[in-house]
Length: 167
Length: 435
Image 1 (spheres, rainbow over the protein chains, first blue to last red):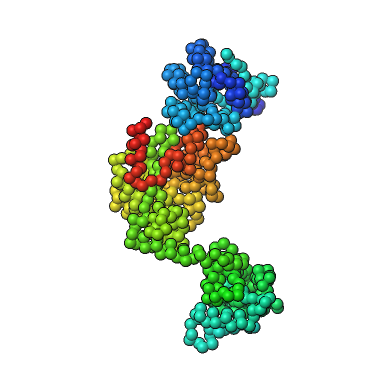
Image 2: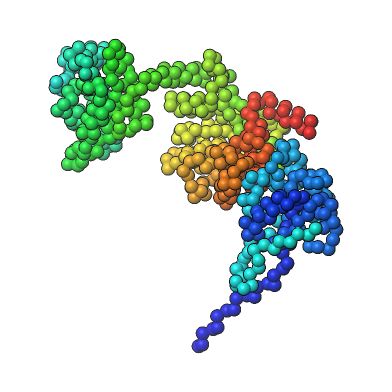
């Protein structure tokens, strides 16, 4: 009897567009630091930047894909991460979206408030670059944050991180 | 000088320190000059028990004699035997040069330390030596006392080696003796000195009180508050640990019973247990009796022990741990990350809770490397499917970082210091009122 032909590998599902990571920071340094953190962590999701709470509000009101995660500075031009959390938690579509807050000088009260408002994590800037993506992966994300698997042929590989700034 | 048997001379006389002191004092007059002095050596065979098990007591005696003989036959170091204990020990005095006493004694000991033929076999004598120089003006009686204390100390920290008496060593012994005496007194007649303080174990996210660790506070009538570590150490060395452990267990259980109505059924009382207690086959019976007497639910009790205690190969300990779990009492591993146990060991044991040691938590607020290490430890332990409590949380930042790693429960000064039972719920309701 002729040997059976080897089974074909199952076809890969068509790649879904990855949900973006929304970075909220008003100054370039904070933005760069968070971007670096995501890039070092080999995160392939697109990264979008908002500079203030009103930006986020506009973004959520648009037809753009919902963010998988929001990473925000504690202090923002108008208000702080607590105000942003109130916005995100009261928005029906984002009420469960993980929100990570980064700062270098949060007081114990700041941190307690953020926790009470449902922040997923607070990270000190000193460790954030190195640990952010690990923390995102540990957080119970509903969808999207995925490591780059399975490996694709080199020609088809996506760029490591798609960075674009939506202003 | 030759082997001397002064305590056999008049047959019936019992060897006393008095006769030793006389012998040393006589030798001092003969041997001590500007260049030379005497060194007292207390020698013990640290593997005597094994030798007896294997070759018998007669063999041990001949081995001891052989070692003593070798010590006395050094060509340049005249020595004299003062006492021989048939069960593997002797006390001798050797004339050494003042400027190189340590080197000479080391040399002597190393020359003696070779394989000894015994019953057609070869035996390695694990010879532990305590040494003390008899300086001019020293009291012989104190010198003998010191050298005996030194060899006991050497058996703990310098097995198979020479340990010299250090001035100041003698301060410990009477203090230990006093501690033990006072501890025994407190246990028997004044247990109120041995109070428990309770440190909250909290849910890091909600701040809810999920349990408390009972911590021993001994208020000594003269010395004041003593550290729990020192108290437990003294108890372990003196055999008082069983009594102390029982006192702690009973007090904590009674307190838990008193809190009925204030705490829910998932609230846990953490009680520390010494590995020595677990070696006592009656431990479980006592535990059972305490649960019965106080009417607490076994599930609310958690016995904390160190990794080393739990991975013990001692069959009695293993049996005790099994019986404890069969009662429904939970087992917790304290100070995880400081010992040598592997996750494999824990995997095979009915462990309910693992407490991550403060040293792993200490620097996670500032150092990315320490953050990653703590996160890895948490991930590793979480594969066991146990509850994890992070110890030693000292700031809100550390608590936040632990939450970010997915750690649910914590304990530490930042969350609440150990406090008397009455304050635990009082402070919490105050906090709730102000919040």
